[in-house]
Length: 115
Image 1 (cartoon, rainbow, N blue to C red):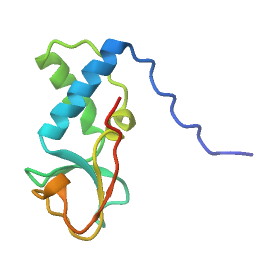
Image 2 (tube, rainbow, N blue to C red):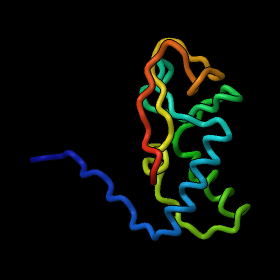
Image 3 (cartoon, rainbow, N blue to C red):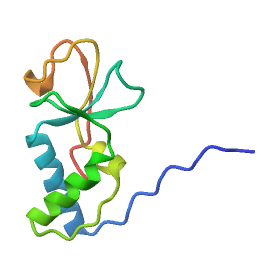
Image 4 (tube, rainbow, N blue to C red):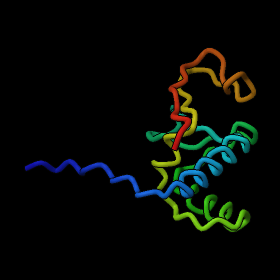
């Protein structure tokens, strides 16, 4: 018996939804967010390179709702995986949050720049 869960189906997005989500991701990047893997957690988390705070992906829904309300958007939240896949993913031993593309001497896993 196969007990592996099927991956979540991406939501159907209208062209306007895609534009709104791209704007939200740009906002998150401007606010200093990337995703990070480090020894303090067994899962990928969000990291704010300006404040040094780490967050679990569950915080994205509230942040998205706040952003939509502030920007008069009606796009539905597509889920954390959909948004996190567009953020820069930092893994490695040394992290310089103010460095070029947020790092020095570590691996950067590319991110998709399109939604």
